Image (cartoon, rainbow over all chains, first blue to last red):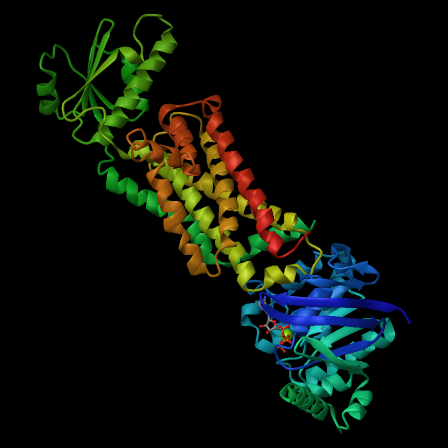
Length: 247
Length: 348
Ligand SMILES: Nc1ncnc2c1ncn2[C@@H]1O[C@H](COP(=O)(O)OP(=O)(O)OP(=O)(O)O)[C@@H](O)[C@H]1O
Ligand SMILES: [Mg+2]
């Protein structure tokens, strides 16, 4: 199996605040990776650096063998930001068209990708509405559709299913699993929903800027002697607190 | 290709935003009209008394909206003007031409003087007589005030340039600012777009709007408001388009130092208002030396100089080329600074 992303000794600070400390991580092709961890742990900061929107202070990140940030690699990355960044004066379709035209796609591909992405997130009927008239969940779905628009090899989704109802969430996850299994896509998600984390092949726990544990959901449950991932999350938090109060 | 997509999107956004569209295209016309009304109470045709004028001369006056009335053997011009309710009197005595202006309303007097001088100089060129009768030899007398009286005509060209500058500055600045505050600028950094492409798209997209605005404002000023245009219409457009590019690049540059639309508006007293003082509405020659140096750092100073030259004095392109070069230099500097300002978002 090929390695898609390699994160080597990456550290990042904003001002004096250290957000990520010496992260080392390898991501394999055709797998789903979940990053979980408390709010402010540094998940978004980490995925942004993988996309190349931010640069590590130390260390380096390689994607498909190329050092990031790299403009050419962005064709291969579908990114969904934690907060929706959409053009509200434009319709859903115009948003999709605009983002599609930033990538190398011919006219036919563009059309079929827009249709596919809209259908996947169940927005086909609302495509001609202005985004300002969309609900929160609809905006989230449109952002996800944009992330898929250029048929990228790697999907990086920052809390993709916040504000999306359980039924649609299930169908989106089924599609993510299909993309992984049938098209061999590599997918990275950050999430606070442990049911979703359970569907990942590997889970990494981020706490205070470090990766404290990585493994399959079952491995993690075993490690923390927990029945489910919620308990893993809490147990990991307790361990950290005990360690820090020991000093 | 990506630039084109961005331009299309910018234009689409503006078209959807009716308020901004109105601000861009209607607000300058409203303000210009208002100022025109305030400064030019009268819009009636001026009445000019003529003694010894040729029939052809009288015809030419009619063409430029002057009511010309012929009189003979007038000895007391001042008396005649008040008696016949004239705005001015033109006395031609061989090679000696004397224009007496009532100058009750400086606007009327000034435009009448301009028109008379134009007509006579054209007449001279037409005849090619080679006599001494030229502009310099028209002696102008004023019944009230003097030729120094300030009027709307002298600063209306400046106003045209100012409005183009102001509205383009504000709207393009807020355009890029919105892109920043809604997170879409950051989102764009996850696509393969380059910094240069973003700057180019903003320049071209808003540049097109600015061009349209300029044409409308200039056409309106000249045809509806009757602002004097002695020089070429196309030179006026050219100057204003360059002014728009300067405003555009300055607007998007300063937007990176603002974090909200309100902060963008705060730049108006800092960046826009001082430019009005130094644009030539107030005499710059009379200012302290260091203030004169300051004036030369203001883009609008050069814009005003060029516009006044073309619209009021009939300057040709080569006469204003220095102003234009300096304006273009401003634009180039601002555009380069823009590329640096965006570096915060992307290194490439
Ligand atoms: N641009 C920035 N400037 C300063 N500090 C920042 C910036 N971006 C993030 N931080 C800080 O970095 C830390 C990690 O933020 P990050 O957004 O990566 O957290 P997260 O794990 O994604 O949290 P959440 O689950 O709430 O999304 C936070 O303490 C945050 O305050
Ligand atoms: Mg986050």
